[in-house]
Length: 192
Image 1 (cartoon, rainbow, N blue to C red):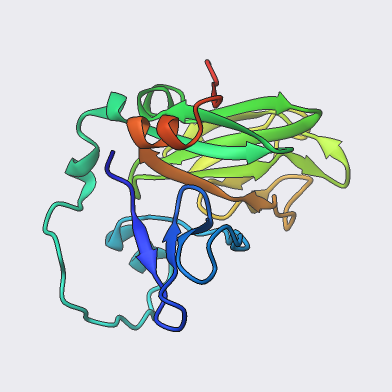
Image 2 (cartoon, helix red, strand yellow):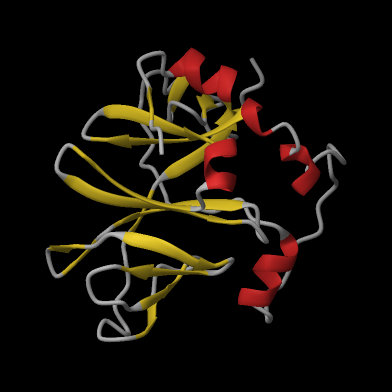
């Protein structure tokens, strides 16, 4: 099924990253608070944060690179809205890198950065005003309503009437499709 299991040193609890809760050990069934994070290529990270320091740790695998995603149908980007799970296939994201949609009255946008091989999901509202987005180029999208230009990497408007506004990024996770569906069998696949 290929799904990460982590263990903490203090309690030796085993944690599922796809469920965000303890699977075995002292904290079994305890939930972790989700944190927004990105899995991104080193080149894209260094471009955005050139002063970054790196901790050099022994690698356990040499397989993780952008080539890891060469079979796009094997991967999905999954997320939760209002207690229900949804996912988008990596193939759909490559074909349609920016997609606006509504789930349970929440306006959202997925944005795929091909250079960084990273997907982000944002709340597509500014001052309670829903926005619809279209792709502009590899690193930018534009909202239809104000025609402002936004960075895919940060969700920040950099040009136009909404300059300086920032979309709130939500928690999402890239996963093997088989693992995601095993943990979230009721997950709905979004179609663009």
